[in-house]
Image 1: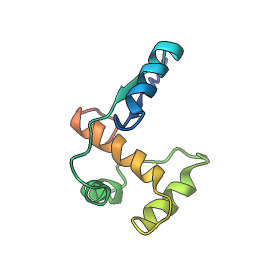
Image 2: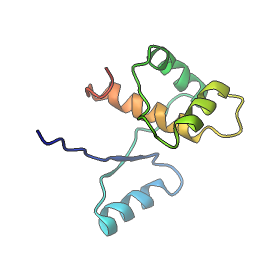
Image 3: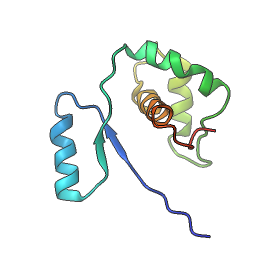
Image 4: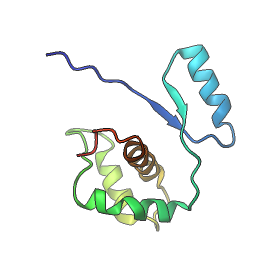
Length: 105
C-alpha cells in the first residue's frame, strides 16, 4: 500500500500574504492557499480548539524537532513571548474542522 502525503501551505491573507501565495504558486508550484481571515482574536480562537487539544485528538509526530517547542508554547499561551506554532496549530485544526477532513480523529 502506498500512502500519498499532500502538503498544503495555509497563509493568512493579510500584509504580504497574498503576494507570498502568488509567488509560491507561480514560481515554485507549491500548494499555497489563503486561509480564512480570522473574525476573533487569537486567544478566543485557541480557546475554541482547546477541548480538541486536551482530548489528544491532535498528535505530534514522534521525533518532531518542533514538538517540545509546541508543548512549551501551548503550556504558556497566551503569556508566552512566542506563539507562532500555536497559531499554526489553531489554523490547521480550524481548517480541518471546517472542511470536515479526517486528519483529526
